[in-house]
Image (tube, rainbow, N blue to C red; front, side):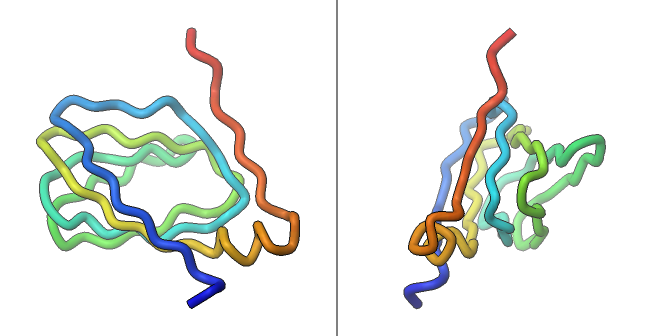
Length: 93
């Protein structure tokens, strides 16, 4: 579909992403492995076959407790086409 974008990520064991936020809302599915996603002050633990959603413009970061694969889908393409999509990454401390 031209309005839905998909993405797959391999997160090695003990990987921790730098916090970021974007305007697109995203549905994540853990294909394999386990870890957690921090959305603001909320921590969402996940394992294989879990599904969770992250809202647009909320700070989030992923941490893998084992080798993990996350598949995601979002409305980023339509926001791109309309010139609305934005992203911001936290500065490294």
